[in-house]
Amino acid sequence: KKETIGEITAAAQVMREFSTKVNVADRTHLVDIVGTGGDGSHTFNISTCSMFVAAAAGAKVSKHGGRSVSSKSGSADVLESLGININLPPDAIARCIAEVGVGFMFAPNHHPAMKNVAPVRRELGIKTIFNILGPLTNPASAPNILMGVFHPDLVGIQVRALQRLGAEHAVVVYGRDGMDEVSLGAATLVGELKNGEISEYEIHPEDFGLTMASSRALRVETPEDSKAMLLGVLDNLDEPQLRAAKDIVVLNAGVALYAADVVPDMVQGIALARRTLESGAAATKLRDLQSFTQAATSVAGV
Image (tube, one colour):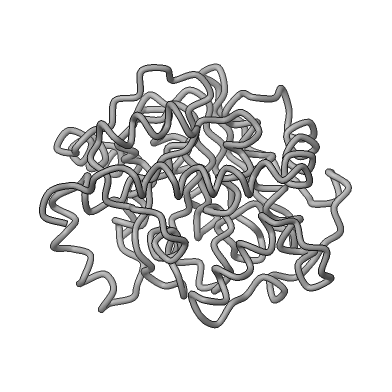
């Protein structure tokens, strides 16, 4: 049985109610860049990489994520491997978002009930309602969101759930090649909530002057490969095998900048993301996050 929009919204509201919140005072351009996961494409951490570009370009990113369910490496896994402390208390995360422009909220620390579910989800390795609820339960209640989903039907469902949950500007995407990101290998189905109105349409890499590339160029075998690809992109290395990875990060960061209302349209967002990546600012943003989280103290008992 498929969950209805009403059921999903109600479940998300309960999870939000019981969650450990992160109170961000200035919510201008506050955005989450998140995927449901479960797309089975085994690509490197595109949304995690994109968040550094978006943050360096003027968005404030409150990233909500966890460990891998179906992929080789979840956002929490790759950030930890980069030396980022993912177990900061809520006040430190709020400070991190304010000062660095990006903060990571490790889902089990904010949704206590999830602690018991996570091992079961990993064991099952299947898509559960939690794949759908996680992206709807940002502990900082980011009013802006770029959300990738693993099934075309979820585009309309999630954007309507976000509307009911009070989101301001949401862009929900499904790549027609099955990716839970804005895709470089196919058209992307978009559900957008803006000014209280929902619109559904398709975008194509070529709309933004990007060359189509199969998701095969983005696949990784191990968490180490994922980390290496992410660093190669942020360092803007001029290697042919990184071209597609850089393009998809620019594409997703650009759409996130649009969702965050940093820019008035996707075209300008993508141009800004490209300039930001090429300037080295995104790599600096990663180092800023490393420094901040290493200097801060973890949550007790972690």
